[in-house]
Amino acid sequence: MDKMDGSEQARQKLADYLRLNSLRNTPERNALLDVIYSSDAPVQAEELSRLMSDGRRLRISRATVYNNLRLFEDAGLVRKVFQEDRVLIERTDRSKGVIRLVCGGCGKATEMNNDKVRRQINEMRTRRFNATDWVLTVHGLCSKCTADLKRKQNRLNKKIKTKNENRKD
Ligand SMILES: [Zn+2]
Image (cartoon, rainbow, N blue to C red; front, side, top):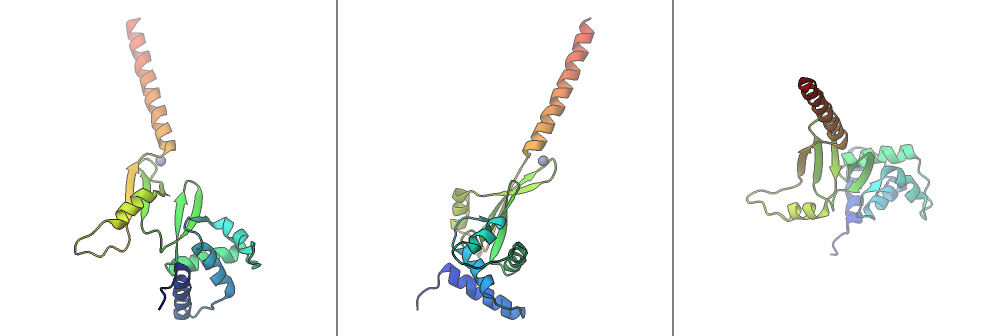
């Protein structure tokens, strides 16, 4: 028997999930899933309804897109990737793992893509352990907090400088 491709496997997984949750399987749902699974790169959520109407002649409202994305996420078929202020959607079968940048100043977390790091971790052998997924956390400061810190340091340096100058007088 031929091995099913990612898109077919995803459709099967979706059908199982819908059946288990007594939800309807619709052509729109399958078409949306196909659009996501036709790309290896993450897609912007807002782009999806436009991509759906391109060539496929399936009109699907933004609300329906978002509702279905939530459903796909619950079914483990897609995941959100946060890139700066954008939210991207990607298939879960190709890209295992998340690289998360956490700011120690404001606590904001963003996610980034680095195919080289991803590949290396995914190819890593774990002894007596079956790794299914991973999260890599990078600690640091975001650009806003870095600027705030610099401003604070400058202010402090200025204060010290004026204090020293006053002493000389
Ligand atoms: Zn910050």
